[in-house]
Amino acid sequence: MTRAATAVAPAPGLAEKVRFLERPAAYPDRPERVETQETHMAWVFLTDRFAYKLKKPVRYDYLDFSTVEARRRDAVREVALNRRLAPGVYLGIVPLTWEPGAPGGPFVLDGDGEVADWLVKMRRLPSERMLDRAIQDGTATEEDVERAALLLAAFYRDARPVEMTPAGYRARFRRELEEIRRELSRFDLRLPAGRLEDVLGALLRFVEERGWTLDRRVEAGRVVEAHGDLRPEHVCLTPEPVVIDCLEFNRSFRLLDPAD
Image 1 (cartoon, rainbow, N blue to C red):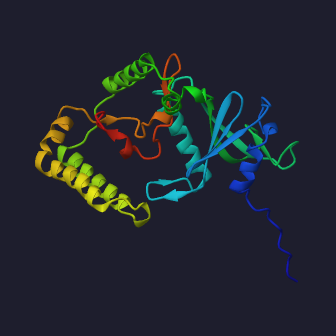
Image 2 (cartoon, rainbow, N blue to C red):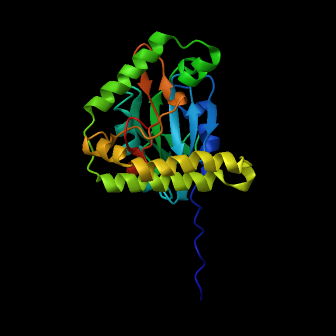
Image 3 (cartoon, rainbow, N blue to C red):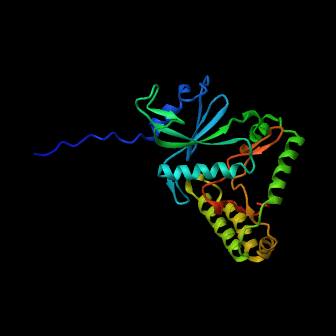
């Protein structure tokens, strides 16, 4: 006599998690509404007071978020690294637990059941004070920009130089330029090939003919573990400015000369 197989419920997928986290009832403080933002690596859920980031189970050449444990480790690293330039914003990580029998389930945010995923919890920042928005609206002042610049200057000043050889840095610089050439040469972008080659050719010639200037920066200890993805939408012009969303998943991308 054969034994009947026991049915096993499939593990909850990303779509189920997103549907749950889009509901105001999912959050302990019961916000009035939840705004969602999707990137190619994460979903972000904005409540009245907080922001929660759920990483997608994706894998690329430069990162691996394919398991719950991998996403947990990356979330821990994201919080620690971003507290360097945004103290008080990154509050920690919280579990999303699988509890089908719970009221309002099948998940519980920061529950005690089986961990289905992890989220980075942040204090929500005022969108109108993000630098990209302030530039667009014409509300960024000289004083705002000076405060943000002083924050970055102190960060770079206090950062420890990383161990790197001049030859290694120059080679990496060259590889990155070649990668930029490949990306920008894609047919669908339809960029003017002549202009692209003029610019990249000049940069590659600089590395070959005047690469010693890059060598001197390395020898002077100018290469540090920086932010890695510094853009206007990551700078918030609060009275004490903060810089969020550093590139946490690949350390080599953060090893930069502040002049970059």
